[in-house]
Figure 1 (cartoon, rainbow, N blue to C red):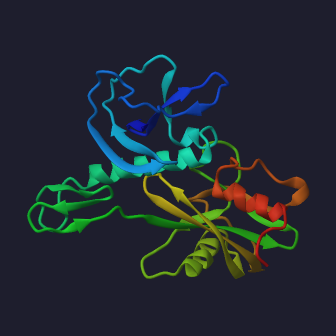
Figure 2 (figure 1 turned 60 degrees about the vertical axis):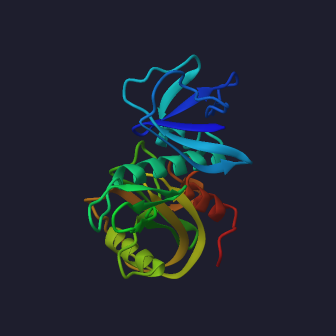
Figure 3 (figure 1 turned 90 degrees about the vertical axis):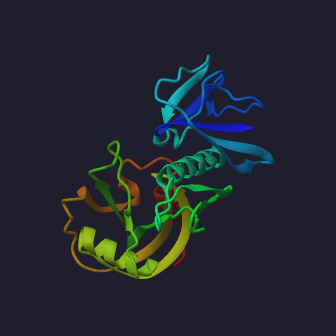
Length: 257
């Protein structure tokens, strides 16, 4: 049994002898006599059942265990295990936000591993995703990279933003690039997607080609940005991020034309 235990945004992890991290894998609850605030079965990982657990603030940890912010584990846990941790986090967040029906206000109960039902009107509820785009913009042998105010560190990333109601993914790509940099793009191509559990997102990755415009940064969101060629790239985001995967694919010549 894999146990994904959270205290707010911090995940309970175990440090192995080689310095790497994992999550508790045991038949019994890994926190002894501590009482969880919520516990849910939500998936299996390589045939092993997984539990999402929400713990109180003052719960002590055992030997070799520690609480680590989920974002900080992005490049420390194996990617598949991190994705399961993200799913557990999303389930716990959704559970905390749907204790009562949004239609009639009555309490809800679990209907399946990923759905709830109102005890009064029967309304069914499922987790809702917030969809965002991220795009690598090419201009000759350079790419557009930016650094946002909310970045943790000095790395640069790619233009990204949330999809608005009534908007296609491609329309969102054009709008976000224009709003943030005053650059227009063309030849938009889908590349890949990635769950983004902060707290319940889906990041959809694209590449696009520069069409026109001079960079004028949206100062409310961006600190700096510009065109960077292969020989002079800034500090890049972690390898597990979709932004880094897009940049690495560009460097390797694997992006669609």
